[in-house]
Length: 125
Image (cartoon, rainbow, N blue to C red):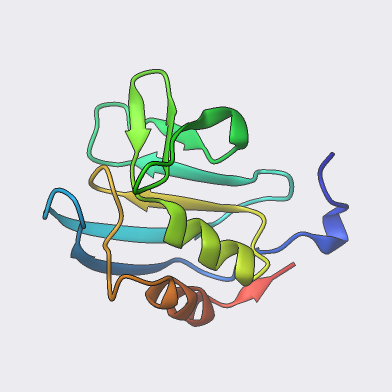
């Protein structure tokens, strides 16, 4: 059951960061977008045709060995655990995480760069 609307949060504005993905070594850009109440957290793959979206929910969990992978159909998002941890820690319930590769930038290997990105964007009701 979703939280009541007055208890849900999203990011206050679009914020982005770029870097290198951990497993593929690809250059990747990630953008956080605000989302409406009850939207949830969704990953948008800008690098694929039709820009498919993966809902970050337990039903879409595909693998947790050495990294968290989510997916819908044949579309996957790899190594999303630090992004999800930061969103949860900052009480963000609704956001679109847009990536132009199959995994986000690794930063320093922690969730800190994502916490900093959320702080930059702000968190609103």
